[in-house]
Image 1 (cartoon, rainbow, N blue to C red):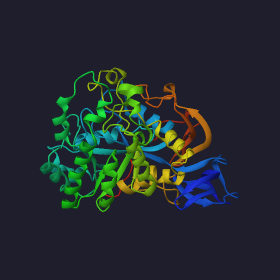
Image 2: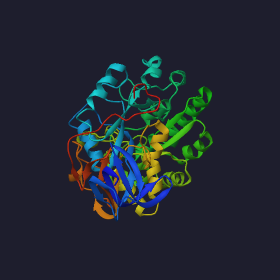
Image 3: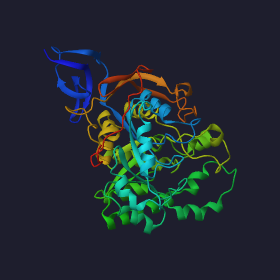
Image 4: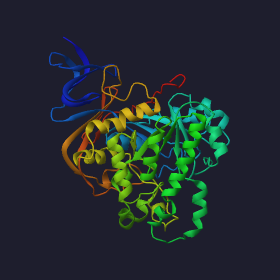
Length: 443
């Protein structure tokens, strides 16, 4: 009789080739078998009948603010929120205080995960004008998912806005580079047109379509010139999505949950709690984002979880902080979109698991298949639940989606064969590790 450490029995499993009701057997943290395991036994068996089993979902775009301000967010709370929200891994951005831009800070951050991370974590390295020559080495360090470039709208020392510096970054190393694509020159040129206390919807007027589109056109010209693959983060305009269909040879695309869920009416309803970069836009752009999801132009959906204090969000525009929370709510909201018929569970698994694995070169994660890490997001598509701020574990304590009623909810998260969350209960101690990537040395 076959023996396993864990068997998930009778769930509708979202496999690379479709959804099938089957059992999943786990041994030593990896998927060992898919099929009829009725004659097998395991130390831990979970009845998944009536539930869907997805590969462990990944949010490839979060800001856990560590090191920084623990009163707003830190790695322990942010990853616990991820776990409760059904995620098995997150990729953490480098614009902390101080920024993650050199080997010493990267080594510290990697060691800091131990005993604090509730899910697995990939680490971005930030590009600056001071570390360009080091980027080719830094991107090869264990657990590094990518180099992040702020071509506009940066904090601290991470702004790389001019073509000469951007081209130098592209020629240092070979892995795919991730970009915040807004044109800094246009941003600064238009800034004097606005003053403190103007309505919040001016955020999308200042950071207009051309601001994003111009930044992306410049980056694509440089990517073609250098041959360096690019990943444009949080693409927010119909114009960019249409344009990027001709750059699939050098570019992959991320769209945020926010740009699939919110339109400009949010400014009137939420004020500063709707302010993010690039901005929430009108219905035309949201429809374009869904069309791009439907025809395959979008590779990844992320949250851009970027907490700030309530005080910082409640200052007058444009003095209010830009950034929204989302790591704990992205899976319920995407499941709600599935329930509404906007995409399938298979497409969701592609956008939030196989897609991140492809784009970033993850090893051992990305699909339900033998030999892969036994990471699972188990969801109940019949469960209805309202997002409440009392559920949010990030210290900032707020979500722009409070009051949103979802159909579909994550009820269990499994990390490497260990049940880490079940029915809103976090089980055991933090067991998150650094995510492994294909070209990282020693990873």
